[in-house]
Image 1 (cartoon, rainbow, N blue to C red):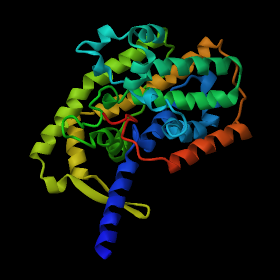
Image 2: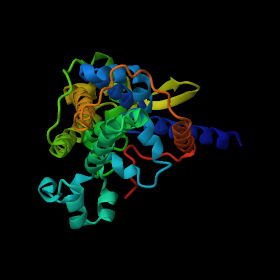
Image 3: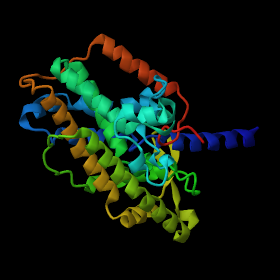
Image 4: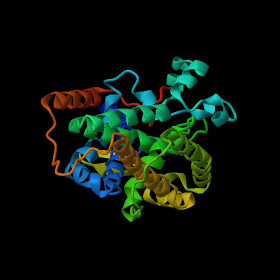
Length: 328
C-alpha cells in the first residue's frame, strides 16, 4: 500500500511539473510580453493602456485558458507550416478565403491557423476602437498580444512542436518557458516605439517565416547539448509553492541559452514591438479615436462572468501539450 501511494505521488509530481510548463511562453512570459508592449505605444495611447496595464498583463493568458471553453481555440495558437510541403510559403495562401478554397477549413484547422487568426483579432480590435468600447479594446488587445507572441515561437510553426519526432520531448516548454523565467531579467526591452503597419497580413507571415527559420537551430542545439551533457545533471527539482517540480537544471539551461546566442530574447523583443505596433495600427485604422482622459476601466459583470467561466474550465481541464496540438 505504501509503495503504491509513493508511486502515485511521484506520478502526480511529474504531472504537475508538466502542467507548470504547458503553455506557449508560459504564463510568466505572456504576461511580461504584453506588459512591455504597453511601453512601446505613442502618447495618444499609452495613457489609456498604462491605466489598464494590470488587465493587459493579467489577461495575456486568457486564450490559453479558453482552450477548455471554446472548441476551436487550440488551433489559433500555432501553424504546422511544414505540413504543406517542402516550400510551404510558396504554397499556402496568405488570405483566409483563398486558403480555405485551396485546402478546406477542416485541413487548416487541423494544422493551425494562428496567422489568419491574428488578422481576425486585428479587425475585432479595430472595430472596438471605432465603437469606443473600452472593455472590448482591453480584452481584444490582451488576446491579440497572446496570439502574436505565440507566432514568434519557432516550435509553434512545425509539426515537431515538442521534439516528439526527434526524441526531444519537453523542448517546447524548455525554450519558451524555462529560459525566459531564468534569464529575462537581463533582457533589454528598450526597443523603440510602435509603428503603423501598412500591410498587417504580410507582416504576420514574415513573423511566421522568421519563427520557422529558427526552429532547426532550436532542435539541433538541444540535441547537441543533450549528447554531451551528463544525464544526471540535465534535470533538477525546484519547490513551487507546496509542490516539488521537475525542471531543466540551471547549468543545462544556461548552456543551451548560450548556444542559442540570444534567440529567445530576440524573439521575445520582436513579439513586444509587434504587439505594440498591431495595437497602434488598429487605433489608426479606426480613425484615431481620442482616448485621452480615459482612466482605468471597470469590467462589466457580464464580462467578469465570462472570464470567470473560462478560468474555472481551465482549472478543471486536462493537461494539454505545449502548443495546444492534439497528438498525431
